[in-house]
Amino acid sequence: MVPILLRMGVLSEADGHALANLCLAYSRLIRAQLKLNESGLLMKTPSGFLMQNPLIAIINSSVDTINRISREFGLTPASRSRLHTSEPQDDAQRIEELMFGD
Image (tube, rainbow, N blue to C red; front, side, top):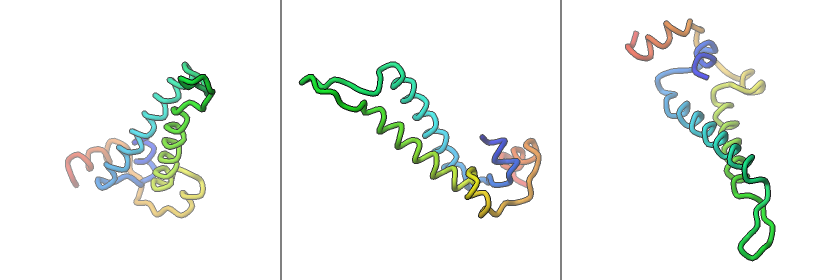
């Protein structure tokens, strides 16, 4: 993700928390989806009734978070059209500037 954002010219030092939140939400989505694949969409309650697996709520919340943060970084077609970016730089130069300053 970082190389894409660097090429787009939208990543700065101030974006660390938003980028971390995007990565956390994506990680949560993948882990919840893997568990859901194992356990299935429905669960039996102790009383024997079928209910939706609670992992579905985690997946939906993660997708919403990913979509919201993706729009902030211009990662959707609509948000990209409204995005103001800096001059794109090569990855090595941009990473060096972020790590060591100008």
